Image (cartoon, rainbow over all chains, first blue to last red; front, side, top):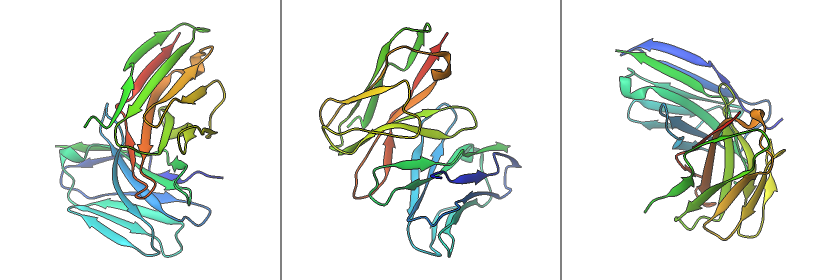
Length: 111
Length: 112
């Protein structure tokens, strides 16, 4: 269907450990977006990937788009308590009129 | 520059009551969306509007109606609320050129 599958559902890490969340699709994606939602907050756009094999970095965050454009990952190096929240991937239809979200990965960071 | 503004932030309804969630954006975006968020299910698209005067169904439209009043405003109406509609509702808008979604702060609705 339209959905993207996201794993794991939850992740608990000690501050300083790394964290990775994965987003998978059974069909080829034209793009993948990542959002972060802090507890009690609203989703905030992080990045969009469109090219096969694309890798983008934002400070400690590394985003990858698979070569086959069917999967993506978000990796956080040396987590901090400010990274706590739920991370969602989302795919947009080619004309950006519909966005479909994964179920999210909830990250908890213990200080 | 307020971005996307939703009202109300909280609402409690009884089964069968009706209500309208209001959303307005000041970013001159063409596209606007209504999502609902339930635990463990991510965000599910209810309705969207690609431009003023047009609306279309998303993944979970049953029990809802929408109105794109003008370019700024997009409202979501529950005609006869049901407990299954207890959720957090987010309005969002996007600039078609960048594809980035901007979300409001959410409206927490409880139907008893």
